[in-house]
Image (cartoon, rainbow, N blue to C red; front, side):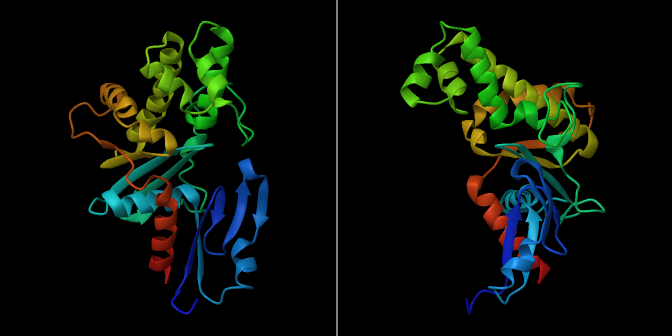
Length: 256
């Protein structure tokens, strides 16, 4: 530990970065957990905490957007996380609870979210949501090739619909296209509010690359409010699963 100057942590939920506390993490059922205080019993170095999506956003910003003033990162995983960089700084809101992109409403009175509200973006655009949408279509389409895919794999995953759609299965194509549409609807709202120079999409599903990116761009560029000025550059993440690690470390270094 002699060469370790600081420890950076990325955690789900609302994070009190100044005091190193997980204030609330709905998916983990955590409230007011003093993580940094506990770790200081074992490590005599500064400990800096960030929301995991903020950490990932900062990592991707360092990797592919550090020369820009405004940058948004959206990660599609168990939930939908978001991180916003304004004037080259992580935007947390006045109370460290900002940038919860996954909890903006996309469907009034829609599916109930772990946050207690209904119709949140993450209820429709997360990989968890994609698995639910895939199962619903499998149940409704007994002729779909997704049945055989699941039988071989032993489970439904975020890849089920995408792989079967690539093979031409009509039911899977409906799932894939509808899922991408939900992502695009959310991104339009984010772009309309922030008009960031760069918006990056991360999470495991982003590895589908142009299969997701091309229709997303077409929809966003058609329906965002900005009709005459330069458009937000929408990209796929570079760091993938390492984004949060890199971002947490860099944020800790910056906080020294």
